[in-house]
Length: 472
Image (cartoon, rainbow, N blue to C red; front, side, top):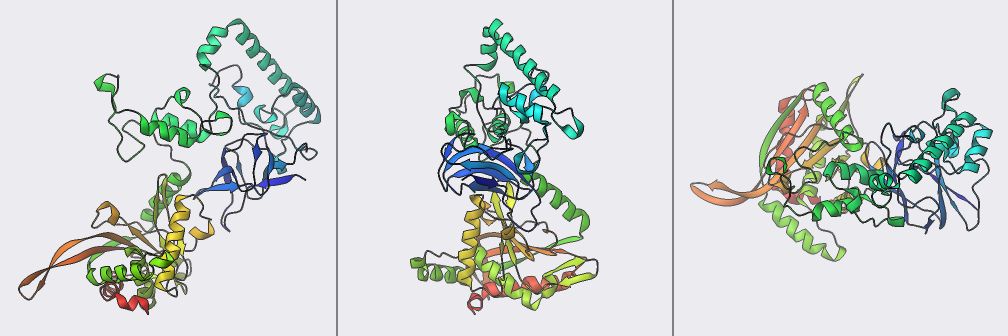
């Protein structure tokens, strides 16, 4: 019995997702639990696993943007055919230059209907099946983009022209294609273009020798720093980044959403940032003791975990910072859901620790570790990233002392955590060494004034300087 492969609904706010990359080729075998395709939403990337074993037949090409619940493929048992009226529509694997004889044939003009069907006439479907032409590669000239008989005949004619050209000018074709067409995922092609990697020199490790994003990453990392280009044209070696001067980084998916929301945040809010120094000697000792006590359970609290708990407890006494602005006014929120920023290669995500005020510190440490791992493995759901009432972001691991974090709407506050470093304090006239950290707080001045915000920040400091109170 065939099993439908769907676009999963990853959260209540999800409206659409992009089939970014098929990891199993059309007609390939897959085992239950293996990764079938990568789905991109405006916030996250998600790897969709196969529910059963069998043969995958793809109904939509890579790059298709579809609502949750759409059928994108079927997993078939041995010898099983697709359900009646459903057609496999794998995308072309070669790059087509604009203006080439078959450029029109690969234009993404086919209109997808429910369950992966393509808007086409019965005669067009029959002709395409007999000729071995993928309907998704045929631009439709009928009403609403419907593919009609004439469109399939035109596609047949274009293909005949290409075949004749290849037969008459094999040297030219071989030169253009190298040793054969390069089979690579769209993600791999985009990354190769950004990094200046020649795909013909990349050995594919994907199904059927397909080049994946990881293959391009590997080649880019292993490239020697020396170059045979003239010195004036030579780019500096990349350090700690996949990008170099001269690259054009597309503003899409996560990066585009971050740009739009942060820009809107600064435009729509009256943001003010303040900072405070925190003595962390006692917190450091408590963290070390708890790490030793919880070692058998594999739990190791971080400094950020201590800050999250301190922020959550302080909000109970300073509710103006746990709010949002609505048309009715400033709404003080009953729940304390702490968002923790996690940096990824493609941007920043903010998974949420729910009810942080009611959770014990150990539970916060476990949950923050789980969410961070899920974020780095692209396994966060939209629900795990929704509903935060305040955010905590840290740059301490990059040796940053102080910064001005930007509020994550619809919150009215965000806490920035700097590095922990040696500092000097005074006891009477005697200097003493101590551990110190700087916290920064950005507020929306429309919702809260500077004085109550400063009182909240001082409360967070006091809790961290007497951290035993975080355990009760």
